[in-house]
Figure 1: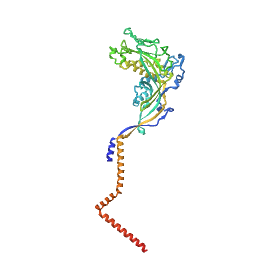
Figure 2: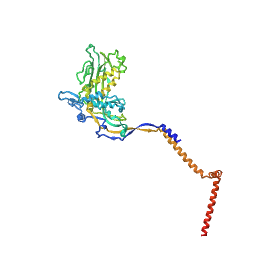
Figure 3: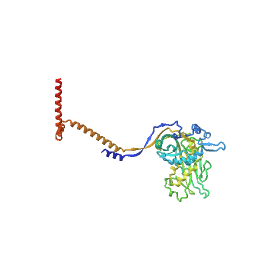
Length: 459
């Protein structure tokens, strides 16, 4: 019976992976890159920006640290532009979870060649809010350290700080009066007028901005006496508002409403409009908020995600590259793809504003120590299902209890007169000579006792 149970239990066992977690440790004072997955503005560069009082005279306030001013030619440029544009081109990721499955071989090769950065801008859906944040994919990397006794999938879980951007937009196409002018095939005119400080012609290249894309224009504003007014680049606010207007090619589809399946394409809501010349136009009124984020990454995915609104000074670091016209080509491309691929335009553009804004500011951020961290690894163990295991334990206990009860009963019955009489009868029936031998031994013993007494008396 025992062998049968053992075979049955063996048949129900299975090999499985068990994740082992080390103790949680505070790493805030450790400069080892393995313990740095957070992000903060570069202290040496941005301390003046972050500690500056909110300016009363904005025209005389210093530029945010995400811009640099060339004293020689008097031009303003993007701080650490090469790094920021590398993040813009290669570092915007669509991965939202399971970061341990990231293609690290490709990223290592790109970093070695200078065609990739260790930074990424990833988007995390926090409830129904899309948060675009700085993230280090290397912190989610897993290693096979079986050869040194640390198991497979060795990696870290951690808590760290970073920065995120959230953008929310509503259509302002009707408000901005994007129209159509019959100006001939070689002279496209698509006028717009969002407010007194922001109007123009999408058929012409904008007059200002570091990147000037025909068919795209932006303006950053604040409300003054109930009306929007453009703000200077030194303006510090969180959230901050901006308009974006565009006219993108629809590749001369015969009827935009016939092929567009998004509700935004319904002419009744006036979100997307056919402005002629083979172009679709729309305008967005947006507000962006910058957040300080504390998050935890466990098993390669986000768990806890807590946000607090950043200071206006911090927000200006993210805002100003977009405001002076960097990233316009990328934004125009996002608008074109949203229309031509029949994506939800509003959702696509709000995500693009946040991702591109964070990427452009990445050059002014550096790694920061983790708040807490623990190591973990995976080992293969033999797993016994609970039901068969507990059945075997209970069965063995029942056998043990039954055996003990039967033993006690046997000892008790052996001492009863009936049992002793039965034993005597069995002995008489099976081996009567045993009784005779016993009687002879008793008689011999009696004679020996008498002789010993006589000897003692004679002495």
